[in-house]
Length: 420
Length: 188
Ligand code: SF4
Ligand code: SF4
Image 1: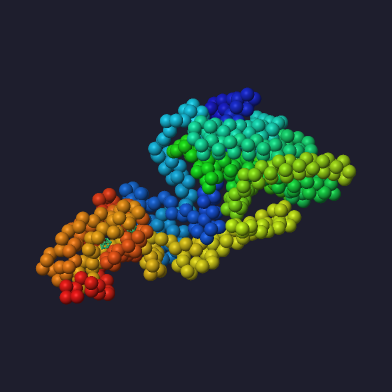
Image 2 (image 1 turned 90 degrees about the vertical axis):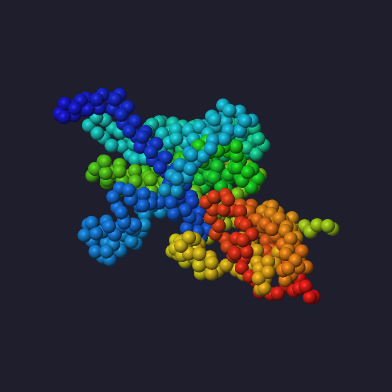
C-alpha cells in the first residue's frame, strides 16, 4: 500500500505524466457532461415545448418496478412490501411521502428516460442507405456534424484553478491563448457536415437544405465574429479562462455590479455589451441551426432538409450534433457574457481562500446551472418565434448585424478612449 | 379587377426592431408554461384535463362521456327495428370508400322472407380496419341507412387478421336503429 502510494506520487511528480493524467480526467469529465447535457436538453426541449403548449410533455417513460419482480418481490405493489420490511406503518407519513412521489408505481424519472429510450429506438431501427447516394461523403457527413461541437468544448473553462502539491490544474481541457478563435474555427467546420450531407444525398430537398445551410452558416459566422470584437477590446485577451477570471473579479459582462464593474466606464460600456450580447446570441441560434433560423431543415418547404435521406443512428448523430452545438453555443454565451463559472459578487475569491476544491466544485455547479438556464432560453425562444423567411434571415445578417457590429466596434473604441 | 390587393399593415420602427415584440411573445409563452405547471391552464375543464397542462391523461381517463354526437369512429352495419338487415348490398359504399376498406359480396334474399322485393343482401361484408380512415363516406352514400360510424375509437390489434371485421361482427357492433324503412314492404 505504502509503496503503491509513493509510486503514484512519483508518477504525478513527473510534469508530463501529471499533465497527461489530469488532461485525460478533464477530458472524460467534459465529454460526459456534454453528452449528458445533450440528453438533458432533448428532455428540456420536449418538456418545455409541452408546457408551453399546455401539454404535460413526455412524462410516461420510466423505470418500471415490475421489472424487478423476478428479483424477490412477489407483490404487485413493491412499495407495501418494502414498507413492511422496514417496519413502517402502511399509512404513516413515510408511506404517504412515497405515494406522493409515486414510488408505489415506478421509479419516478419525470420522463427523463424518454431521450435514452429514443436513442435506443434509433439504434435499433433499420439502417437505410439509398442506392443513389455518394457513400463515402454520406457516411462522413454525420461525423462532421457531431465532431466539431465536441472538439470545440475543449477550451470552455468549467471552473477556476486548483493548486495541488504536484502543480496547478486549470479546469478547462485546453487552456489555449486563442480559445475563442479555436471555438469559431472548429465550430465553423460543422458547415461541411451539413453541406456534404445535402450534396451526397443526391436528391433535391437535401440539396436545397445543404445549400441553405452553407449560405446561412457562412454568413452568420461573419456577423458572429464581428459581434464579439467589442468584448475582446474590453478584455484584451482571447483566452477564455482569463476572460472568466476577469469577469469573476470585476463583474460579469452583462451584470457589472462588483469590483471594477462599478466604474463609470463599465456602466457606459454596458450599452455596446448588451448590443453585442443580442447579436452574438442570435448568431448562436443561427449557427446551431435552431428555430427561428432552422432554414436548412425547414420541414414546411424541405421535408427534412439536409438529413431527409438519413435514418437510424446516422440521423441520430445529426440530431445529437444539433443539440451538442446548442450546448456549446450556450456555453460560449455563458462564458463570454454571463460570467462563465464565476459565482459572482466576490464569492469566488472568498471560497477559494477557504478551500480551493470546494470553490471549484461550487463553480462547476454554477456553470452547469447557467448552462441549463441558457439552454432553457434556447428552447423557450424556439417555441415562441415562428420561422423566418429565407430572405429575412439573409437580410438580418448582412444588412443589420454586420453593420450594427461594425458600429458597435467603433462605439466601444470611442467609449474606451473618451470615458475614463 | 379579378383580385383584391391586401393592405399590408404599416410597421412602426419599434415593431421593426422586433426586440419588444420578441419579449412580449416570450411573456405569452412563459405565462402558458407557468399556468400549465400550476395546473391552471385555460379550458382545462372543457378538456377534462388533469395534472400539468390542459390534457386528459388518456388511458386512465377516457373521452367516452365527452364524445360529441357527430363523432366518427369505426363503421358498423345496423339492423332495422324489425330485425331486418338493412344492407341491400348495392355496393355503393364499396365504390365510394377512398381507402378501399370495404368488400361486399352480394347474395340473394330468400323468397319466403318478409321482404322478397329486396332481391339482394350481402353474403359477405368485410371492413378492413387497417385501411379504414374513418371518413364517413360509406355512411353518407348508403341509400339504405345501413352503415353507420359508431363511437368506437380504441381499436387495438394484436394480429392482422383481427383487423378484418366480418358481417356478423359488424352487425353485432352496430345493433339496431330506430326508424322504420318501409320501402321493401311487399304490400306497398
Ligand atoms: S351498406 Fe349501404 S351502401 Fe353499402 S352495400 Fe349495403 S346498402 Fe349499399
Ligand atoms: S369510413 Fe371511409 S374509409 Fe372507413 S369504411 Fe367508410 S368509406 Fe371506407
